[in-house]
Amino acid sequence: MSGRVPVLGALPPSPAATPPGCFPPEETLRAGTGDIASATETALRAGLLDAVVPVPEGLTDGAGRPAGRRYSVYRNNVAVALHEALEAGFPAVARLIGPENFSRAAGIYLRTEPPATPLMMQYGAGFPAFLESIEALRPIGYLGDVARLELAMRQSYHAADAPALDPVLLAGLDEDALLRARLRLAPATRVLRSAWPVLSVYRYTLEPGSPKPTARAEEVVITRPGLDPQPHLLPPGGADFLAALDAGAAFGAALERAGTDFDLGATLPLLLQQGAFTDLLTE
Image (cartoon, rainbow, N blue to C red; front, side, top):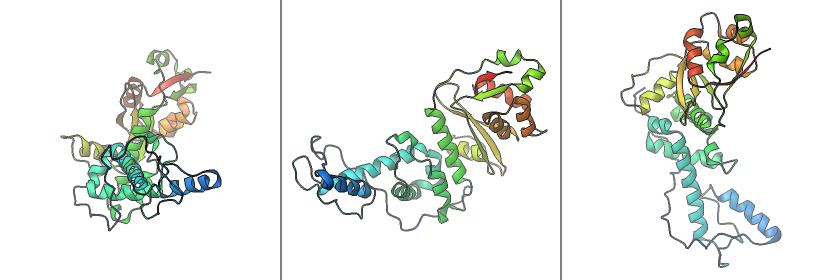
């Protein structure tokens, strides 16, 4: 896992940020009017992430002059903002492949998959699969799942708040009632299953002193007991147990789904302590 990662081929480099204050804030880009405006706005959006596309015809600045360089600056800053959003959202991936590889990969991704929403915290949902599609990065087989882990942690961070289930409510059920009960996962709870030591790689990459990963599959649950998401290793069957509960299965059915070797005694206290559940439904 510590071998040298090959640098990606001749891909367009990530743009450099334009120094602030280049133009007065009142000088904004404006389209024309009527049908021309609609066509210009379409061309503007199409060219924002592609430096090869020329400045849209009819695009002017606040003084009515052709946009020219101002559009190039605006286009560059959009690309920089998206690149920085990806780098902030996938720090382990960035470190695993190095800044040059990450910059080139991000430059391609932001042009092929522009944001579908103005909420930057949601940007990058397709980045894990995109990384797996890059031939030069395929030797790093765990890279896509590390990206999925980072994406899940970001989603957990931005998930809605919900009160944690009081463990006393669960402890008060007899065995039959417990097996029939349904546990609702908290909005911030996320589950990831990987054929790779995904959490071990993540920690080894970002947390100094973490042990070197060993070749094994790992199942991970992400909880958010406070402000920050916390990833935890699950024993084998843990992901199936939580997936069944999330799908609406009763506690007993979820246990069957997890398998006979599933260690409920080690898993359930962790999940309750970390606020993985928010509600208990009994018949």
